[in-house]
Amino acid sequence: MNLNHINLTVTSALETQQFLAKYFGLKPMGKPNDKMSFLTDDQGMILSMFTAAEVNYPETFHIGFGQETPEKVDEIYRRLKEDGYPVDAPSRQHGSWTFYFRAPGGFTIEVLC
Image (cartoon, rainbow, N blue to C red; front, side, top):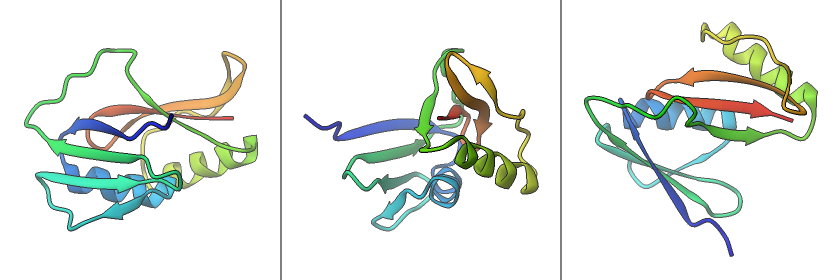
């Protein structure tokens, strides 16, 4: 069984799509706009994003991007930091080399190895 799709409610579908494509290599699908946008990964999973005026996820809600090495986690952290995103440095948590941050769109992302 494969996960087919996930839908996120975000504050800006287009901004979120562009961010996830740039930092996590997801591929845009179709013609994006600020009401709804779509991404896919190498396994064919589809991430749909729909814009809402207000986004309120539970405190523990997040999506995770697993990396092959701690160095890749550090690289993504550096890119985000250099581009001005407020991110805390990676650290050892729950057996992983990881960091969490608030993504454009209003939800939390974990980057881990």
